[in-house]
Amino acid sequence: MPRLVVATGNPGKLAELQAYLNDTGWELALKPPELEIEETGTTFLENARLKASQIALATGEWAIADDSGLAVTALNGAPGLYSARYGATDAERINRVLTGLAGQGDRSAHFICALVVVRPDGTVAAEAEGICPGEITEEPRGQNGFGYDPIFGVPELGCTYAEMSAAQKHDLSHRGRAIALLKPQLAALG
Image 1 (cartoon, rainbow, N blue to C red):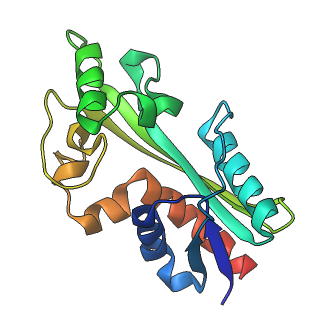
Image 2 (tube, helix red, strand yellow; image 1 turned 180 degrees about the horizontal axis):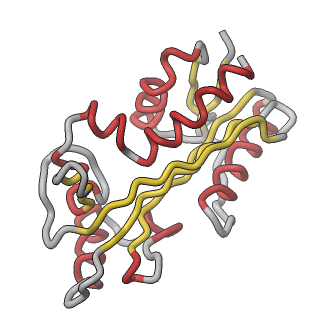
């Protein structure tokens, strides 16, 4: 079974990716904890390429990386690449978005996920980008998920990510959409 080193030290993210890729025949493993990659790209795809290629070169194995975030139209695309650093906690990040949208009529937003698979020599073997359009709710709703999930509403379902079941989010989310595009490429590589 081929192995992919995931450019994360987060076991939760590893488990989530493994659940998406269970039927592909690829086994996933966490990156060595001492490898830290600075995200210096100007797009989610650039950051994912950077992380995957550096992990592949450092380990001599196939690697996969993702970079994702929330882009709010009325905030000129913020938090964007800085989604994880838009505050110290999820509550602070959510509050900053809601405060920034106070009095705004346009609450449109989208989540983006870029995924990149790199060969052991550091060259890109596959990549995909998934986007889920939505809108920012007036206040947090739901108990599931993490991050911005309680304020990211998906109009087609009439609920936030945090109100969705895990299966709904798995299929509809930006990560789910990116994985759906990546899977055929992985099958060709495996």
